[in-house]
Length: 239
Length: 239
DNA sequence: CGGAGCGTTGAATCTAGTCAATTAATGTGG
DNA sequence: CCACATTAATTGACTAGATTCAACGCTCCG
Image (cartoon, rainbow over all chains, first blue to last red; front, side, top):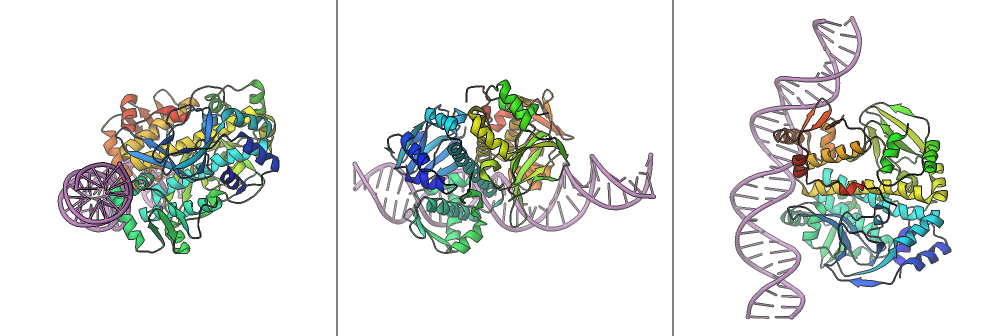
C-alpha cells in the first residue's frame, strides 16, 4: 500500500486520480527488511529508487576513523534515495533502523514520468527539495543550537512529519532509535547525549520511554527547539 | 554571460545546442549586487530564481538569539534559489559575500521547461540534488570531523567547485569570506575559528592571505579533510 | 545461566565559548 | 597624503561544554 507516499505528496499539492493510478502502477512489490540491514549501500548505482512504506530508516556516512554521522531520518512515505535517479550514484548508505516495509520504483519509470507528466515530475522534485530543506535545518541545529534545542527540534520535526503520514497516535509516536543512533544524528558522543537527555527530561516537554515519544507540552517543546514547521512546505498549492 | 551556468551543468551531462539556446533565452538581464546586500530574503515568495554569474553568495538563517548559520556557499554558475521554484517559499536568506553579478529566470519559464524539455528538467533537478549532497557533506563535517578537517574540507570543496567553472587560477582562488563568515559556516565562534586557522597554517597545506587561497599541498590537504569529490557528481553521463 | 545490547554514571581531560583588549588593515574626508 | 573611524584579525584568561575511558545495572533471549 502506497498510502503514506500519497499522504506525503498530497501534503504539498493535489494529485489527480490519473497521477495516483500511475504511482500505484509503477511501485513494485512490497517487501520487508529487518532492522539493522542496509536498504541501500554507499557508492552503489541502483537502477531503481526505494520507497519506505513502513518503519524508520537512516541515511548515513562512515568516516575513515569509523565514526558515523546520520544525515537524514526517513519515515513512512519517504523515498530514501529518489535523488539517486538523476545523481546515478548514492553518496551514502541507508540503514533500516526498525523493521521496514519497502517497495522499489524503476528509474526507467521515473524517467517516463519526467517525459510525460510534468506536474508529477515537479512533485517528485519537490520531495527531494524538502529533503534539502530538512538538511539545512539540521545544519543550523548542529551549528548554532544548543544540544537540548537540537534534540527538541528533532522531536518536533519527526512529530510533524509522522503526523502528515498518520503515524502518530495523539501526542505519541514510535521512535525506534537507540541513544547511540541519536548521538550519530546530533554528532555528539553517546555519553553526552545521554546526559543531555536527562537534563531535558526535567523540563517535562516530552517523554521517551520504551521507544515511544510522548509530547507533554508542545508549546514548551517548540520553544526549546526554536521550531517552525515552515521549512517542511506543508501547504497545499499548485506546484 | 551564462557561461558559468553552462560549465556547471555540462560537468554532469552533455547539453544540446537547443538546450543551450533555450537557457540563454530565458536568463534575464544581468545586474550587480553589492557585497553585504541580500540577494533573496527569507520567507519571500519569488516568481523567479536567481542565477549567480560572478562572485560569492551565502545562504543563511538567523536564529532567535541573533546567531547566524550559513547553510551553503554559492559560486559562479550556481542557482542560489532554484529550489524556490517547486518550494514556492525560500526558507533562508541569501547574502552577497562579495560584489556579485546575477540574473533572474522566471518560474514561468522554468515551468515551461518542465512541460517541454524533460532532459533539461532532469539536469536542473540534478543541480538541486548536488546542492543536497553538499548539505550532507556539511552535516558530516559539522558532526564528525575535527574543526581542522572541516576547514580543510571546505577549501577542497570550494577549489573543486570553482575549478569546474574556471574560477581558479592554478592552485589559487579568490575567497572573499571574512573569518566571521567562515565561523558561521562551521558553526563555531570567531575566536575559536581564528585559533584553529592558525594551527592549520602550520601544516602548510594551504595559505590564505588577502582573500586568496593557495593550495600548497593538495594531497596533504585532502588527507586532512578526508575529502573525496564523488559527492559533487562531476562525471558526464546521460541523466 | 550467561551473553549481548542498551542505558547510565563518574572522573579526568580536552575542546570550544565568552569576555575583554589589542593590533592590523581598510577606507574616508579634509 | 595624513588623521581618524571602522572593520577585521589576533591574543590571553577564564568558564562552560563535550569527549574519553571505564565501569555497572538492566532487560531480553537463547
